[in-house]
Image (tube, rainbow, N blue to C red; front, side, top):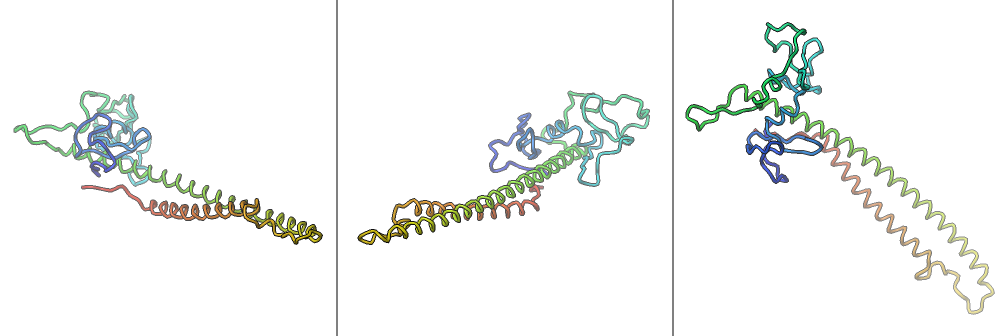
Length: 253
């Protein structure tokens, strides 16, 4: 997976080492945000995700899981994990102290292009292809994990919104019921007291324009309308979350 510049990105260089090489950039979660990293930076910042000798990725969600304790060796200086089978047979496993290639030769970076004799053609070796594929797999796994976390958070927010909407609806219905009871009691009191009034004063004072009763009922209708809108929006969000369940990072070959 080689991801080119995203439409919302303002830069096409690596956001860690500033390497201007968009051919080898990968979109990957990095330090709490999504960033474009070159192949070398992806490998350097994820040393425990692959074998530094054969460049196989350890993906706990796939068949190629991290090797068992008896079949791997951990670097003394970093989290790099190497297959025991990838080490030279002359090594006495597990008695020796192992340093990964990156720790043994810090001046030799990952994914270092060479040049042909003509000086104008980039030499893309098999080892570079393995490193590029390794970084692409690491980025893909990281993006899938980030999507799973985002989907879980979104679903939780939807459930909370639905619960809050239900509680608010019940509260509004209860207030409306109490106010209706109060209105009936007030109208009964007015009817009892208006029989002796001269001029036949109207007893339906609760429904006159500008009365507190009409103001409150209008407010309740407005709130109910807003909650209906919120229900519609919540349903749309829930549909988006369902669509996200089948989301996979875009692959560009």
